[in-house]
Image (cartoon, rainbow over all chains, first blue to last red; front, side, top):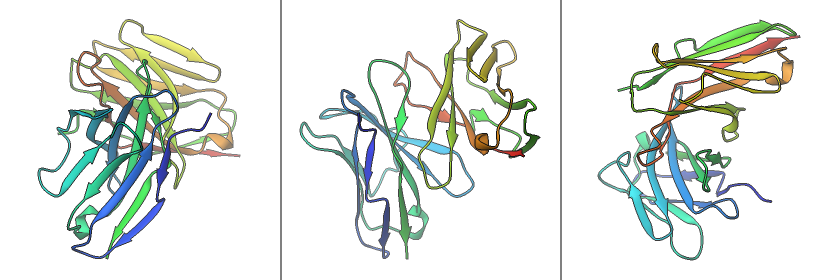
Length: 112
Length: 113
């Protein structure tokens, strides 16, 4: 049973480019969460999605960031016009009926 | 506003001794608490959880204690092993809400052989 998959593991973008981060939840999980970890900080919640629905996006920056979890395919976190402050590790987690969230290995985004 | 706090950024313990990691929270709506372990360049790995209806949950060498009146929880690892060396994150959620987790800033545990 594969765990949560994230790709790419490392992503380098120049300022102003777009970044797309992908997350495939564990088999049987329908809840997906995105978190961001800045250097020397804990993980900060960004958005919670179920298939085709955004349930809670209270942690998402108001501009440039968007997320989706389509009926088919992975969840995608999209960052438009990246800036240096977007450099961080982005983690996706998934859960089933229980409260435990299982995390993927993360995508480390570096903005040059 | 940091609703979950881990005030000790690091902890060193001798192999075989007990490791105690502490966590405080401020939001009285939190009713579910989890501990995650994280190695460098990997995602957090779920360790153990506790619901607010309990004050203790044990799983092998790991025990989590919850003191609701003090809004405090702790993770005990006994006996500590070198492979336990990692960053430990405390997390909390309000299960009546959207279920997103609020994380502490982590404690780096080093178990000295």
